[in-house]
Amino acid sequence: MTANRPEEDPLIPVLAHFNARANVFFTGNLCTHVDFNQASGYLHLLRSGKTELRDATGYQAILAEPSLIFYSRPLSHWFDPDPVRGADLACATVSFDHMAFNPIAQALPARFECRLTELDSAGRLIELLFAEAFAEHPGRQEVLNRLFEIVLIELLRASIRRGDASAGFLRGLAHAQLRKTLTAIHAEPGRAWTLEAMAEAAGMSRSSFAQTFKEEVGETPGDYLARWRVAVAQALLKRGTPLKHVAGKVGYASHAGFLRAFKSVTGVSPTSWQRN
Image (cartoon, rainbow, N blue to C red; front, side, top):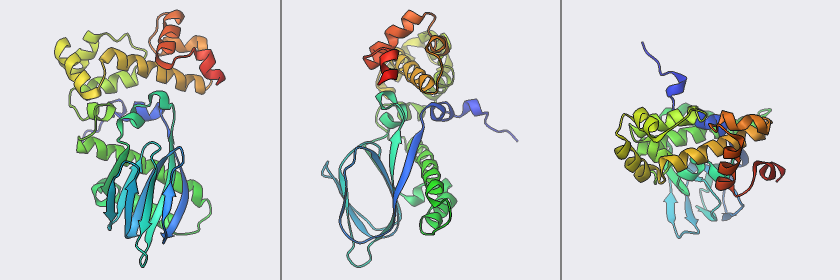
C-alpha cells in the first residue's frame, strides 16, 4: 500500500502560511429578508427549506436543496426565504491572512455555489457541523468555527476537481504539470529558483512552461514567485521572525534585494508594513 507524502500535497504549504478564519454568527431558521454587506467574506450552508439568493452583480437563484454558498470577498448579497418554510441556515464570516497576495483568496471566484452532495468526501463533516449548529453543547462556537474552516478546505478541493476556476493558483493546481512546480515553490520558497528549474520541476521545456504558466496562472512564473516569496515573508514577520533572518528564508541572497522585492510587491518597506 502506498500513501502520498505530505510534501506532495499541493495545499499543505499554502495552508501553512495562509490561514482562513471563520466566525459563525447565525444558526437557525431564517424566515425573513436579510442583507449581508460587511467588509468580509461569507460562507453559508443551507440545511433545508427554500430561499432566494441575490447579490449586487445581479445574480439570482432559488435554493431549494442543501447547498453551500461562499462569497470569498466582500460583495453585498441577500436572502429572501420562503415565508412558510423558511430556511435552516448556518452562516459564518470568513477572513484570510495577507489579502495583498493570498493565492487562495485571489483564485477563488467572488461567488462559489454548489450542492452539498458535490462535496462527496465531506458528508459526515457536514452532518457533524449541522448537528453542532442546531444544538447547545458547551464550546459550540469554537467547534463550529473550526468545522467551517475545514469546510473551506473541502471547498478548495471541489474547486480543483471542477477545473473551472479563473486564471490563478487553483487553475494552476488543476494542471497536471504546473501542479508539480507550484507545489515545489510553495514548499521551498527559499530555493534558488530559475525559470529552467521551475520548468524542469514541471517536466516541460522552458518556453512551453513559461507560456502555459502565464495562460493558466495569469502571470509570469517570475512574478508569481516574487509575490509568493514576499507573502511568505509577511507571514514570517507576523509570527515574530526577525527581519534580518527573513531574506534568506524566502530565497534572497542579499538583504537589499529582499527589500527591493518587498517594496515592489507591497509598495512599502518591511518595517513600514510591520508598523501598520
